[in-house]
Length: 172
Length: 196
Image 1 (cartoon, rainbow over the protein chains, first blue to last red):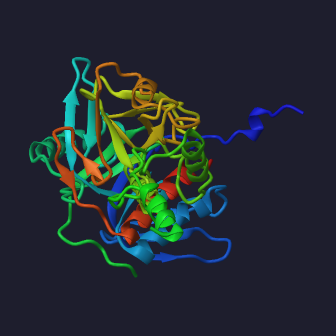
Image 2 (image 1 turned 180 degrees about the horizontal axis):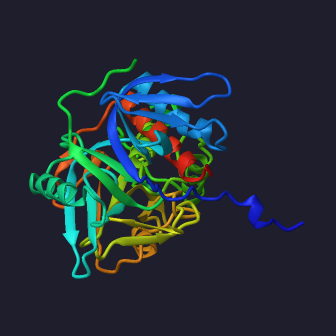
């Protein structure tokens, strides 16, 4: 019997926000049958709906942040407090930032081999680009990160960039 | 002269009076592998479920480090092959079903090399890269798979964990951090292929 497309794994959709946040985990609570509630250090609250097929996969990012420390990258709707997708925020240094004639901006970080694009129609794009260019000018190595970065690896997109906080959040 | 003296003289004459200085000659292939051994190492690495071969978006430096460490511990004269794209616009590009886009674009890529004994007794460095290949391949074949003719192929020893194109090297992380990086990448892979 031949395989069908249903047998093939399906890729997750790209992050669609519309809001994005980088931050340390303040708390995570779960109640049977209810949404998991994630609170970041900035006080923002985000709910992971229990009916999601990928609930455990998304929750794993929260548990990782709780057990090992580090930052989370949240894609979701801030006004409703609903999570679209989660990821581990990366502490990175930019190595090469290029702006093409077509306005396409691409980034190579020190360490990760993939080239990511920066969409300039994102609200924070101009600030992210400035931070990336400053970082690249420093010619840092992977063990010298100066940025906290939110990346959507499905779309190969750098979505949000902030200066790296001075201390790494501890495990909780 | 007695019979025994004659016999002793005959025995002594049958051997060189100078002691052998190197009873075991060094093999010119020390630290090298036969093609079958190289394939066996490749298959062994490919079968490792803890190494995220199916996450080509990232992790090559960590995979290369772990493979190189195990080869070195087994006495193999391991090195690394690095391939650098000249720019983001001229990225290395590999088609793969393991990325949601169906391909990956890299600024660089790295994998371990091993010397493989050729029929004429010489050795040829071969790249072990289960993330994109089905068996050991030459560095030139490995570079060609990355579809960027103007890329810069550099062969080094096994030491650099991460190396920039201009030769700057980052310190090697400890075993716990190496394992943590694998864990991050396994998690990212799972999320990239999970429907909400």
